[in-house]
Structures are given as C-alpha cells and as structure tokens.
Image (cartoon, rainbow, N blue to C red):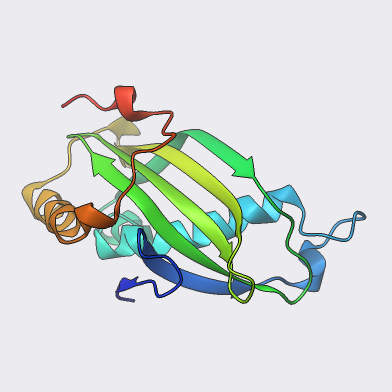
Length: 165
C-alpha cells in the first residue's frame, strides 16, 4: 500500500481508513481504548511495510520493530460503524530507533479522536537484540522524511530526546 496525502489534514500523511466494529464497542457505548491502539497498530504496519521493517521483514529477514514506549491521548469518542482516518503527524529515526506520531480523525465529522506517539527499536529477531538499520532502509526513511517533512509537526512530542542522532 502506498502512502498518500490526506485531503482531511494538510499537515499529515494519510495511512488508512477503518470502520469501527461492533465487537470494539464497550459498555459505555463507544470504542474501547484497546481498539484505538489496535487501529493505530494496524495503520502503523502500513507505514512499516513501506519502510521494509514491518511484518514481511520479520518473516523474510528476521528483523522488525518493537515498541518500547507509547503515549496516547483520547480526545473524543468514536462509535459503532463510524469511520476514522489514520494519519502520520511526525516521523523520525536514528540508527536503531523510529519515532512517530499518528492521529485518528473522524472521517465524516473531521474531529481528531486520538493521537498516539510511539518509540520503537529495530530488533534482530534471531538474536533478540537491537540492531542498526541497513542502508536500504535508511534511504527509504530519508526519502519519506524529505518528501513529507513540511507536513510534519513536532508539537507536543514526548520522545524527541530519546533519539540518538
């Protein structure tokens, strides 16, 4: 899947749209917080696949990312059968880590339902140790940053000091 510019938000990169399922609704009549994270994780996989560090890489190269810190803010509830767009608000990396922030926006009503910020390590799955990104992946991530940097926002980021540049 190719990342495309979001028409809903000028300062982000569109990843994917999801429809809230009945089984994701809790006794309060809105989507349970675990499913916000589930949706963010599914959308992040779209981005990770583009960078060749997602599920396919885990299977073929035995290297993948593992989240080590997250910060999620729930702004407004979403309910059964509503659709949400997931967008990249920020992306950066160092030689062993990626740092990104995603937003969840109501597709029809355009409000921001939630954001999540994630810090992940790149891991050799055979050794179960952190490893450095190879040149191919660095070039892909650099190209992504160069193409979209003007759309990124560094507002309210919690993990910027965790990257070692």
